[in-house]
Image (cartoon, rainbow, N blue to C red; front, side, top):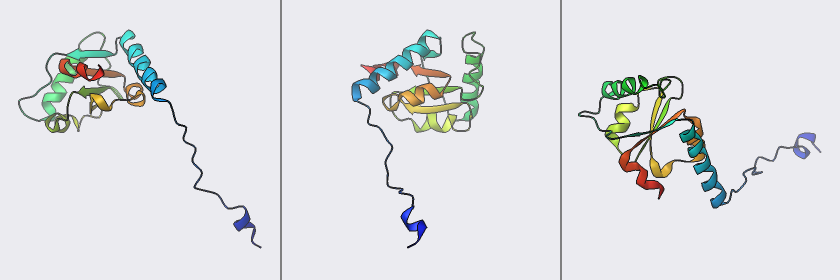
Length: 130
């Protein structure tokens, strides 16, 4: 009898805990409202570029960084841009920026909201939360 066989690690054990849908939804909106209270949520009128170039996205973030409440948007995990539908051009423009990420508004969750310092919404993306 080998000791290794008796004391073998069981890798099939699942440690995940199922969270009820209402509780997850409440946690998401609580996190989002905490960000809004701390002035870390911004609504942008128009988020489109002539070309899908990183320099246009960098210019947008440089312009936003001049605002007093969005001053740290270009540092660390700066901003999550929540778009209403998938936009390859916008994703291509922002993929080389280390402080920005693009996600569809319907795919946001509590972890993504809390990971980023700022959440940016175009006006038409706000309809995803109704």
